[in-house]
Amino acid sequence: MAGKLFVVGTPIGNLGDITYRAVETLKSVDFICAEDTRVTLKLLNHFGIKKKLVSYHEHSVKQVSEEIVESMLAGKSCAVVSDAGMPCISDPGEDLIRRCIENNIPIEAVPGPTAMASAVAISGLSSSRFAFEGFLSVTKKQRYAHLASAAKDTHTLIFYEAPHKLAATLSDMLEYFGDRRIAICRELTKIHEEVLRMTLSEAVAYYADKNPKGEFVLIVEGYVPPEINEELTINDAAKQAEKLIADGMKPSDACKEAAKATGFKKSDIYSIINSKK
Image 1 (cartoon, rainbow, N blue to C red):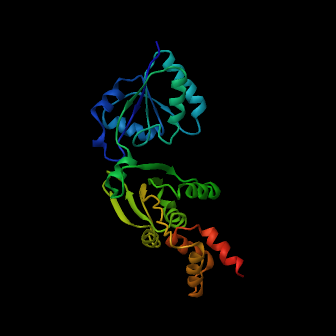
Image 2: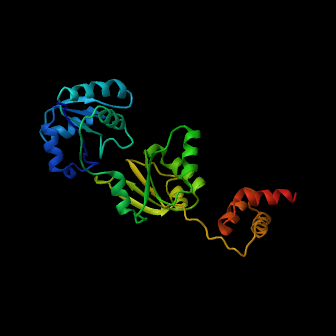
């Protein structure tokens, strides 16, 4: 008879947030697969749990997944954990879940804290509908494509970000999203927990001369479609842009502002202005 995979949520900072069920599950399984065994070992030592640890990260997914599945097919039980929060969400554990499903191995969730849900709850932004976007790519082409695809999403957007990339990410978001509201959640549940609620332009200015520290969850207001004034025409929008250009604004920026104000596409406004040259 096959064993079982337990997907166990662990604290995102404060060790007191672990559940009784999570502790009992970690004590009862045959082995634990962890994103970083050093991090998990500290957690296990704190609760006096001694179990075999298997390193499971993005560079060892294929080989280790096969070994874990074989052990469970032989009747062993396994708990999968991440460094913090619920595993198998935007991490290598996704692959293990798929393999267990393919092999008819039972899977049981042992819920725990999640940084994204905690951040949304205290952000002050709409929590009725939201989209988890995870980490942005370090590759510029993929990064910009990701931001562009999310720019018109009306759901509240959730991103994770590392401190050394925060300033650049905020600047990129301002460029692609416009000046929306944002809640910057830092070090959730830890001693230096902090939530800053401001606009993206304010956030860019705030971090211009600061050295961010800790882990960040960024909650960004979703896209709000402008109300199109049916009495306005595309030519009226072009005239608004031309006035802004005459006042010294760059053509691209002027068309963007006119698009926001009228609801017409920036590219259409730009085409009309260019056709008059």
